[in-house]
Image 1 (cartoon, helix red, strand yellow):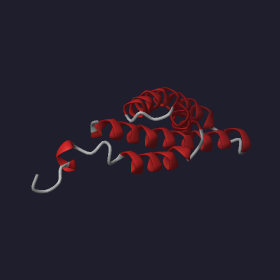
Image 2 (cartoon, helix red, strand yellow; image 1 turned 60 degrees about the vertical axis):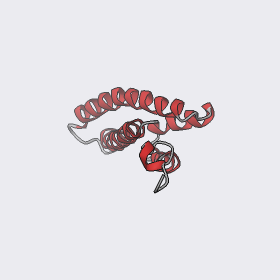
Image 3 (cartoon, rainbow, N blue to C red; image 1 turned 90 degrees about the vertical axis):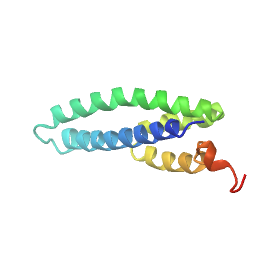
Length: 113
């Protein structure tokens, strides 16, 4: 498996996580704090998060299918983009587990082989 599969997933996990945190802050500012101008911010960040979450789903599913993950575990990874901060924790755990599988082939060979 290629390292780029894991890298794409990691980048989209961070992008999705940051946008979801920004969206949460915007919703709090709009509805609880009644901040003027929060409407446009929530709309823009909401649209961006929505579209980029779809990209996250595609990359996460691609990574999970290439790593032959069980569907239940893959479902939790896919849902991590909907809970603020969850994407960061899930990404870290998945990356630590899958990094050896996605290592380049030449790095897997023992020295002197």
